[in-house]
Length: 159
Length: 180
Image (cartoon, rainbow over all chains, first blue to last red; front, side, top):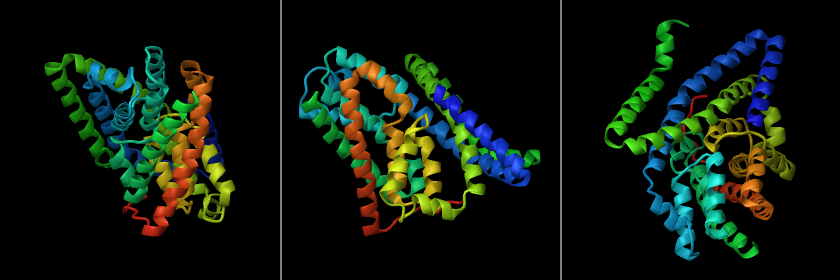
């Protein structure tokens, strides 16, 4: 929340500076922002709606089966896959992870879930491809997945 | 801007909003429980996005006008070296909001001359190393876990960035055609 406030304040400040320096340029910049925004908003809305609907259809049992209790390779892989497909806001994901740990889940599984959750984006792939090209998207996500599992393994060993 | 310009600009968005409304109604009729949860999650996400995305858009516009290609190249381009990489990671830890907000910004960086590794590092940091979220992680998962995850993820982010770039120089960039 505070960060968001800071970002908006800084942006407002920069906008003001820009306007004072050249109102013409500032207006051009804003027009570009608006155009970009109008192009992107459908994507954003689509992504949010898709995530919301997908998440609400994941049954409780699946979450528990994949993330709770025992730690096996299938478990960790499953957790990573679950994290890949879903995208939960950190605000929800982190407390969720905390309560899963308390309920007995292993740190490895949770680490795999969290890391893939935030780094690999399944639902957001189309947007990423559009903005960054298919190669970057492919490699970034693939490597993130692989590294997430490695990180999870190391955390399991070190915790 | 006339009304017609306005409509043309927001045509896609209006369509998506209507489609969403239809979907929500459909859910409400057949899957009321899921509808409730969907809405809750959508609300949470929308809040995060609305708080940060407009500012990011404005910043992008301003950066486009005021930051010359040369400056981007100097600090984030191929010659910027390890310092550029670290700077990219650092910048990625500052903002708030989900990763996909960063995509347009990252794409813009790339087109303005930033190095692939720097752009990927920026995104990686934004995804997993945001300073605003680490506090929460410490609170819910403990200092030890948070420390380990952050340290290991930092290495991973750098690794992912460099390897991605390597793969691209080997096989070509594959950028999609994008206007602005």
